[in-house]
Length: 287
Ligand SMILES: *[C@@H]1O[C@H](CO)[C@@H](O)[C@H](O)[C@H]1NC(C)=O
Image (cartoon, rainbow, N blue to C red; front, side, top):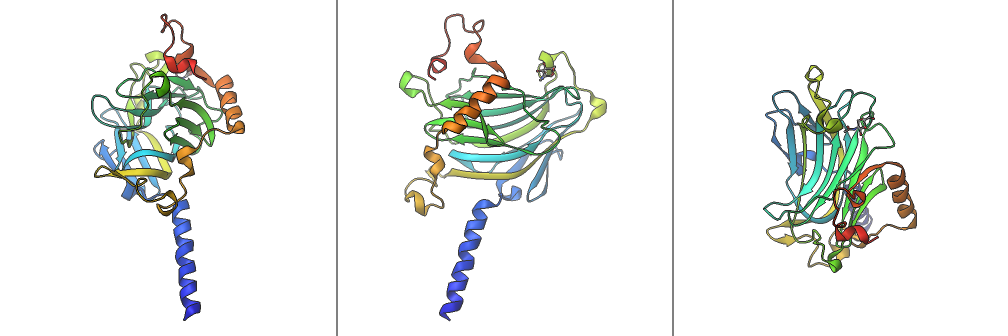
């Protein structure tokens, strides 16, 4: 008897550990919000969005998050994707919203995608950084992550940090820390600006365009009825040690970040002197 129960407890323990490592079920986590059937959850770990001349499509998370470490694998529209934009972002609601953006701007076959990033706090963005990638993001799935904690927001690609937005409240820059955000994604036509500033148009003979998603993982604080899953109970009893809540870039990751910024960053608002003739926004002078 004692033997059986300890075995049962052991199995229970194993399944709890395993469930925190396995990706979440798309059916439980997301709703397709628009696109009249062009967005599809094909199985618990595969979602696709598509775009044709009549419409794009999109989905959003059922949960609202206030801080988290959120991973998603995306495989972007292959071939001639010029004019298309795949946006994957966190956003709150209202006029003074917060937002953390990944946007993938398509291109002609063989030309690189642009990964556009931005951070809005209290309705103000204008903090764009853009990158090319060190791989073809249409050939396979790659992991795009947002680490959002009270100290900073870190954007990563396959575990390599590409951007850090530090909490600069001490010098008067609002930081997203009070408004819960939902995950959103959409695939739409933006050929008026996306590719080479709008010069290259979407080739509708290639439609439908499709982007795929899998392996969603959120180690995050979920807010429901005004209460965060992270508040109250001590961290260790709320399902994980939540080390990410105070995570920062270690020396190795700082070096990786510098490598990306040196070799793959194609635009940084913090060095656009034409745009800010009166001086850069205060957070630009922090690092
Ligand atoms: C498309 O390719 C051109 C040429 O390599 C590049 O300059 C541009 O950044 C790429 N991305 C977009 C979105 O235009």
